[in-house]
Length: 205
Image (cartoon, rainbow, N blue to C red; front, top):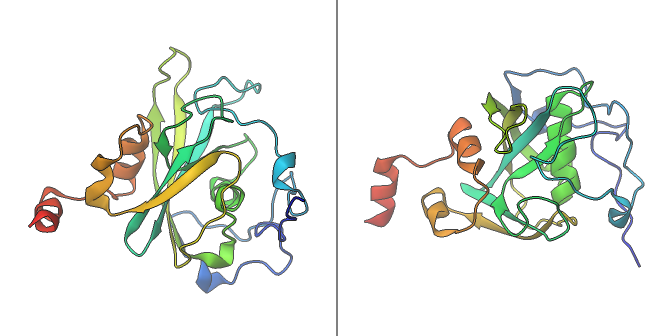
């Protein structure tokens, strides 16, 4: 029997407490969802996944959000399941399409909820990073990637159908995980989550 979801943190009428989620550089007045409420959906009712580089049906700008989730200095790596249409079996961060009329911050919070069941109140920090412009490997239009760094004190996550495993990894051990999505490094670098040479040397000694 499927598990009913808790109220979606974006749609929760109580809203997140301001001190629980610190959003830097990109301020929003509320976290009310614009459109698709998902508070009472079951996980199995979600639509089939699309890979980042699969052509979306909309003719609007091709934009996504990408969130690096951290717990106690460790980076969350998520192994994409066979249910997604692109990069299945590879390690990645939390990602999702951004509709033309959506706010990147709201979408980032929604993607965190959908992929890990972490509500907004479980986020200690949500920081916006640079917006990246990535070339499409299939020769299509470039992709705009809104990057975020999120921190949580909650170790246990509940994955949806998009991922089949997750690991909390020390930054200097990221290279030990073979099979990463090609542009994950771009996102990690954008939010300053890659260890410096000095930090790597210190960890190895």
